[in-house]
Image (tube, rainbow, N blue to C red; front, side, top):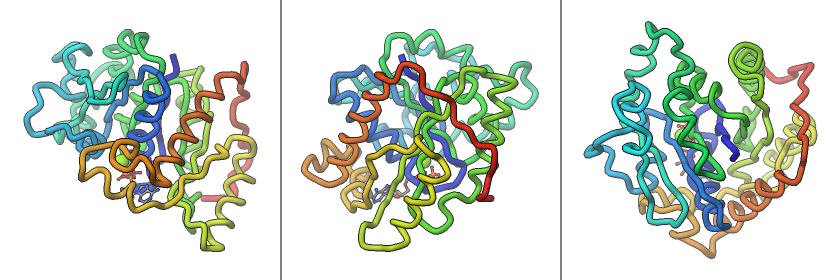
Length: 268
Ligand SMILES: Nc1ncnc2c1ncn2[C@@H]1O[C@H](COP(=O)(O)OP(=O)(O)OP(=O)(O)O)[C@@H](O)[C@H]1O
Ligand SMILES: [Mg+2]
């Protein structure tokens, strides 16, 4: 069982798109997958066509201890792919949790046991390093960092890495950064190529070979409530995310992936 947070506190870099489509491709390759929407924006839930205004339970209720995992997990029309949806109530959770004893571990407490029935659990984090994100980082064992191939790609990465180190020391010794995913690549531009070079230099050996190209079908698919492999199976986007899913599965052959080293942070 692999539990993975898709994390980057920078907004709009491809976290949700990657969670949806990586999840759907892993399921197509025969894995049992749970995707969890931990963002009050609920983009992931909408991307899956979930009617977020008429939900009985969302991740908010789970975090509050108001429902069981089995009551909040929804089956999707994709075989082997389940989802825990979010809704706007979750935006209040950060504040509501502040006074709770063990506030960083509530998600772990309520959800951990339910994860064993899956091969993969992917968590779509909000674009912040607040309490919701800390709850995810306390629960999962791995982090994938989607990075947009643009000028400010590595801005804020230093803060992200510091948060990772603190969580690893205090809350979750098992946590590792096991993959950097390059997203929204435009092959025509020199800038995209330069950014790929810089990211590979910074995260030596941790960057997936698959690069997710910019593809208009990927930006259209949320409004159709479908992952790319259902909406446009012949598109570049579909090809790229299937390739990423195969690479993620191949990681399992690495018996003992070494944790990411980052003694210096050249990018602030
Ligand atoms: N490879 C791609 N090609 C084209 N459009 C993309 C691609 N990846 C993501 N997008 C689009 O870019 C926008 C931002 O992507 P996404 O929502 O996945 O980012 P995010 O990191 O989850 O954002 P947030 O921080 O707000 O949660 C969306 O409109 C999405 O459809
Ligand atoms: Mg998102």
